[in-house]
Length: 502
Image 1 (spheres, rainbow, N blue to C red):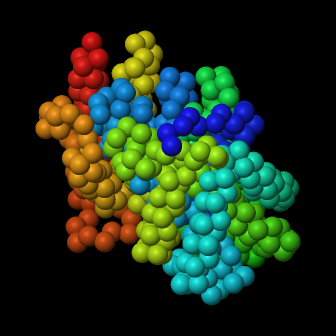
Image 2: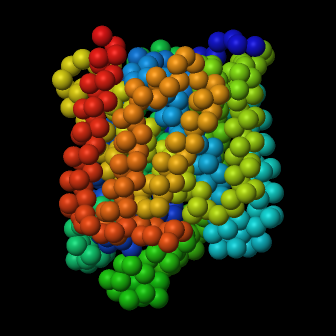
């Protein structure tokens, strides 16, 4: 059953997977929230997010050329650091994948409820919506079991369909652009850009998909790098133009809002559709709803395809159920991993039918692997330029974890530490020795949690705990504290890992 995966993905299909995994429903729903936090300054926030994402994409594409194995982020940490860091990183990323897949299908259900209200109640999926979500999960799982090429071609078609409505919106919005909407440019101060970045990162999640299918890419060393550059360019340009058009096209009077009251835009559940309607284009509003639904469905299809690769990788290394590494003898796909991952996504859909809750869980579980991947590159590559790049990526990843808000930093730490139970069952060798030599990882996770607790109270969201951030380190002191702490952990881990590899 353990056969080789088929190399069916060329440059165009890989770009469609990358763009498809990133351009989901977030770009249709988040512009209003970003503008409500920082007003027109959110345009610069999206530019900043594009640049930061570029660093992570470069890190992952470099690692992807070295380790051409399905599973990506898990292998990077395992080979560069140790077995346990690799496992924790892979487990955290796997959680973010199957929980994030549930969040994406929730977006689809929520947009469909615009016309079929019985599917949801506010941001909670109804029993009927849950049934529809499970049905769609089964359909897309079957498509991907039949073969990665069938799934990738489906994703390519859906990627094109989800981008076209955004292009139409950009054209109409820029034609209707009101320069007066840009004044004042930073109505809530320039410090508000950090919170805007914290909320907005969700729209950039998914770029790691380019390396998750490394074993299935034709001429991977060349194709992955070219696909990474193309994906970043397309997505960044699209996002910047959408937020620019949205800010400039806001018609305060038609929306029934006070001019310049950007915070009121947080009430728009379908901001692109609402702005389109306020401009008098009902057909464009309908197109936005359709585009958001197609976008959610396409992104959902991508992650059903990709999440199984992480389970496949963990299983192949002996850290997960061995059946998850089986490859279908006919279709050459990891069918057991696909089925298992879809079952876990289904359980999330049934047990946690709340869109905000699953988004927060998915995001905090995903930030840790990004930071660890940057550290992995610094360990593997000897040139000093890679050490600097690795440090920059590690600090930025750590800041994102901090910005993800209390109490979700604590939630992410608990998820990562809970993976120790699986490791103690499936992990190889002297587990106690492995725990001692990986002490920096646990200090890192606990340290970021403590910094989140003593940090700026601005970075808290949907707090379900009786304790809130203590506001001891206010911005920018909190940024400095996180950066210094991350640098110390980086030097500690880098020294130990390089010493181990000598």
